[in-house]
Length: 196
Image (cartoon, rainbow, N blue to C red; front, side, top):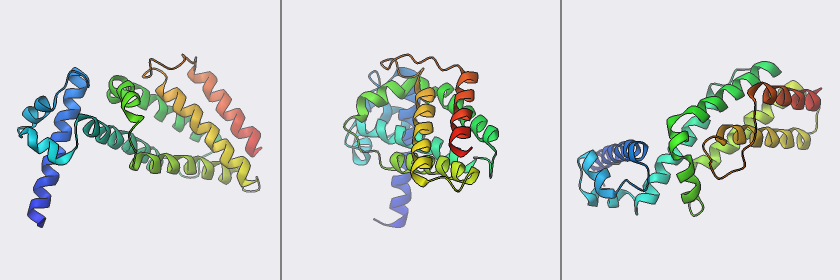
């Protein structure tokens, strides 16, 4: 495929993804058809099927981009060499941003239903990098602690922050009661105990 054709294909894919994203947010996944997406973007239905096998793959491509971009931004904008309170406040602020984002509120539940059969390419890589960021933060506070302890703590923090970020979007999960101030106190206590 020539360079010009590749550029046109990328533009088509980008426009179709944006049309689909808008329609999924406006109407929901179930109420959006491939015909709706193609029509909104100004392309034929065949253009959609040249890019994805179907609506499920298109949706997961959009969701993968959204979550990967959110995690990537969280890593890139993390404060350099933060103290405990600065980092915990930053992590909680990002969790709140994710929780309140329209994509999360409206499409998270759909992503859970579809994702059981989907292979996240970029998302898993960025989730590992996020956990690594937490590990390096803890290591920076006390480099003498064993890696096993710091990596385990980073994983625990990652799980708690994910649960907080997704609690309002996931109607099927248990309703955890995460008061922001209490969550902050608990995370600071964990960090203090481990890095002491």
